[in-house]
Image (cartoon, rainbow, N blue to C red; front, side, top):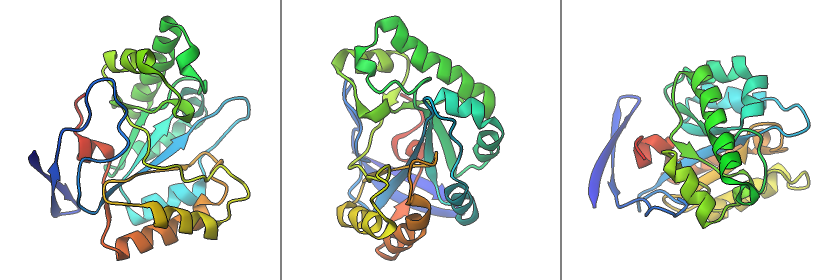
Length: 230
């Protein structure tokens, strides 16, 4: 077990780090028992053009909230300028969410998997200037062989501790807030959508963040909690 220090906005935070994950495993929580959380957002595009939810984007920037954005290739190309702007903030990080957001990558052949990962990697690196180090499978669907293929390309796979349910149009901000607050624990990796598919996330997010902070939680980027190297 290691003791790791994270410095954010001039304040040093220290928490205990245990081995994150053995090869061939998906990371679903941070390696800490302290009140540290990872706030993550998915942004993908399939058939319908998608754009950043400005209410979420502006809130994260205005409040300088550390967060990790998992971006797919089609979405990145369509939202190039906004993504480039967000990547300049040191409290945000951009990670790999596949090229075309095919929801069952475990059904793809080896070369198709490589294309989904490496072509999006090239797109994100060209736009942001930084190579992604974490990968999130679309819909969280994978199997052992596909997971190991992605890891062989230098990635660690990070999913989430529990689904927020924000793609459900019927889940209003009150329900979303209650659902997330009831399930959050030290080390939770929270997932929302920033591509317009988190229908009530922009409305609910400020209250969720404010209440979690009131409870003593703080947010970190995945790189700060897990390290940048695979």
